[in-house]
Length: 233
Image (tube, rainbow, N blue to C red; front, side, top):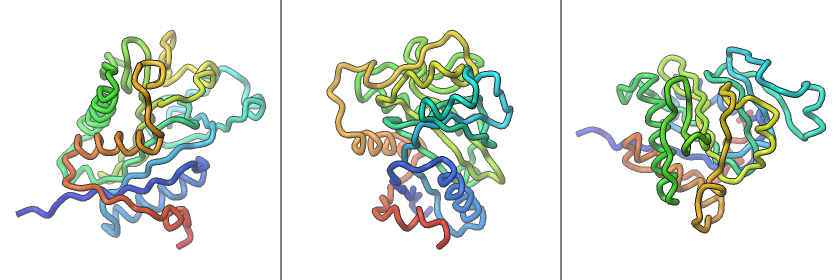
């Protein structure tokens, strides 16, 4: 009989992007060494643009010198995907899990992330779908509501997904989101007539959908974010 599959979840609140990268690097190393179980970080970032490893700077539509004027930062990453925006009122999930232990390849992994967001959107009467050919993420019609950008190293995942709850969509006007021109970005707030609960509840609902999509038997909610935010421990 197999052991129950547990997903350990840390809800971290708002975390600066560079601090998050240090936390993520540490946890990825620990997961590779089998020192921690499958782990998920649930958080938000201050207004931040990130570019994937292809370095598609041309999809940033304003000079970098103007970013401080709009209260945003720009960071380069080693994830897949193109430029995207992270900010307040997004549900951002970063799974650090072993794909080898569940027999998943990269494509199956990304499709399961998409499925978790689609299932979550349906809870609010929103009919979302995966992207068409050459379109990543999750869409409502021709409007993008969820982005995915991942990295897989030695079978361990990092980076992840961002689902738009009610972010300031004006930030997306300064980029070609995910490198896909002439497409709108939307949010759960815009797409549903339902009364939205607190964002804490929304994060938990999305995490539950993800855990179900990946067939975890249980979720272990970690209650003290200071433990993991202290990267020097």
